Image (cartoon, rainbow, N blue to C red; front, side, top):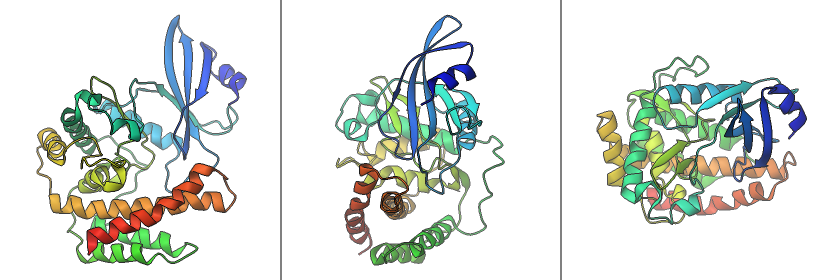
Length: 319
């Protein structure tokens, strides 16, 4: 991080300690202690890692999504500043306020008190997701949803990714065929976070303190977001069905209370299979970043080794 250039870009801000936060294989998050107008504040600077996934949104678009969510009352860190000048730190970045809490999945699922207790936490998270799906701000960079059922669009996209891979993935193809045969008809199209899961949700003892990482947001079926959160692959070994935190019933209840819309459980469970396939494809892509030499990184290399477990879960859900 080029702190002198950053300080010159922020002439009215005194930058104190900066440290790279853990997590974020695709993006970097830097904690910043600053003083501005005589007040001590805690910020986070978010920028690109050495390599990103092709479907990850650029920082300017993620910043716009964060602003829209903040304006709609979603619990997100307040967005403060966007810089697209790569001469400052070598890549575009934005700055947001730092929120208190814990996001690390392996810690969250072991706690009985974060978020105000397990059932309170997932009920509140259901409400947060409903608020996201109600965002109506104009976001012109989001492509209109194609006039085909979202599940069939998903199947086509995942097949295209698999066709570009180094090796055949018959179990993933089997799962895609299952989804194709059972695809629900098109439903209401909403703004989906597309990575709403334990690990991207900041919880404190008082409740939800922040919905993070908006780089994959797009229009889609609300059940896709719901299924991503409840999928087994994001429970971090916990037996609790809603993100490894609490019950599916409490999560659904929070969503339905906020949205006034009844969740179709059958569709959610289909999207859980889709979530498992999607995570497997992402894991393969992340491992490829290491294997190709673009970004040699142990975390990326190890991510590729979770694919057999995900394939087992796909078979269990489809046979």
